[in-house]
Image 1 (cartoon, rainbow, N blue to C red):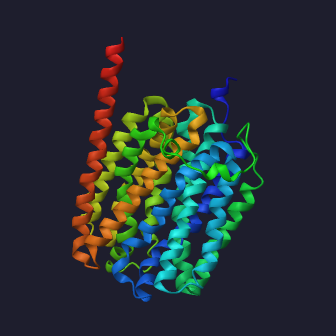
Image 2: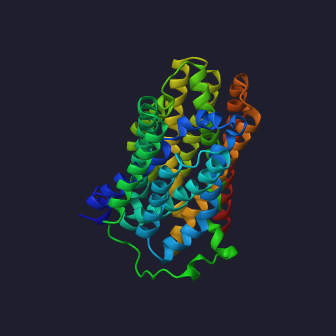
Image 3: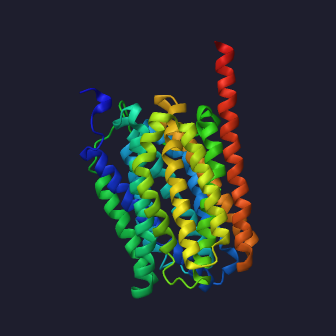
Length: 395
């Protein structure tokens, strides 16, 4: 049996996926309750900062995590991300001032600045290139399951046992993720012992130039997620939905089904075609969310958004790796994730600034963001056209 035909579903891959599921559940489980929690602290007008501050430090840490991933190893960098989640879960109940809350959101962002970068490089190490789309799709599915389980569990725990218990539960999930990671085999060879010089970043370490096209698409497309994270909890409450994690559960369940096939399709028919379909579906979802002034409308929009991201994400991740060289996979993934954090943070900040706790503005913010996603759609078309023209000139 040829290598490309071997099963990718090994114990090593399964453990990686389980660790990511728990990690995703850890930091996502508190998100639906944070807007009201911030209001209780007297910061209702700053809801856009809940996500923006988190993504700010996540983005800043990417060049460091990419460099450490390529030199120190995948496993220790993954562990650092989960350790940050453990510590923050214990500190939220202690730091109960506005300044303390915002400081924690900054610190908490380091978690996603480290773990996903190293995880994506780990996947590329253990999976044959011709199966990257499928593998990243399945890994993304598990990460999304965590993103669905987390908010639902978090809201349930908060409603029945209080916010502090929810924060502590977040730490528990992250701790279990660490236990799994620390028992996994390192895939970086040769690797170096940690040295402080690894933390010295030059301009060339910040971005992998080959991955910039993927970064542009990521930045534009993930602005929608920032908008959704900021507005959907209040939009859900306005519609009379008690469990604010319901949207995220519906979104993820829809994403799960499509991820079983979308990664394989991108391996077979190409990343560009699949990304275009995914972006178009996301545009439709934002229009539906803007018009969805009922519980059923919100759930429909959530499901369509889940389908769109489930189509786009595996192809976009695999495209990033396709564009990079093997020795710079960590930096390439860091480049994509920097763009992701800027997109999410920018979308959240702008949405919060326009929203200002005025519910009737939410539909118009959704429609405006649909235009941004269309920009990503046309950029992919432009990139593919210019690539074809360059190839034709060389023939």
